[in-house]
Length: 133
Image 1 (cartoon, one colour):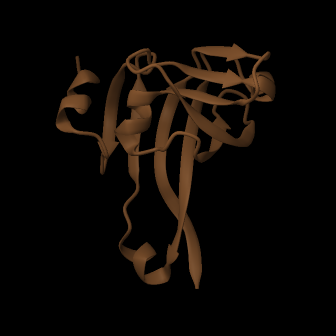
Image 2 (cartoon, helix red, strand yellow):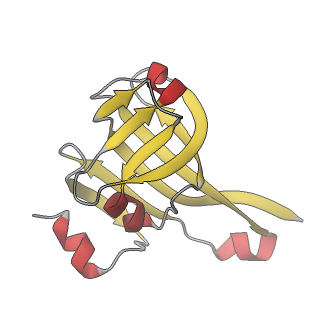
């Protein structure tokens, strides 16, 4: 039997922009992706804490260091700058693997510039340090 488990999560990622005239996706600062090990073009599930909207799309890397989280295309209708998001990826694994699995998560603050909590980070200590400054 295989089960789907949380693989990565960015909690309280703040929407910095919304671009309706785009092909669709969620642009996320490449350093935020690296922080938890999300992959460019990976399928993501997004929950908007401000309005309760939930949607699936894919992550595209925004320029590193910009701390951008931008709703693109149709998803631009599902939030606005300032909204806080939960961005998640999942993995399929055996029950035995799932019983010992620990996801990589980060809770953000300060317009995506600070990490207030991190569990099982995928990022290097140097990258983590840039979020503490």
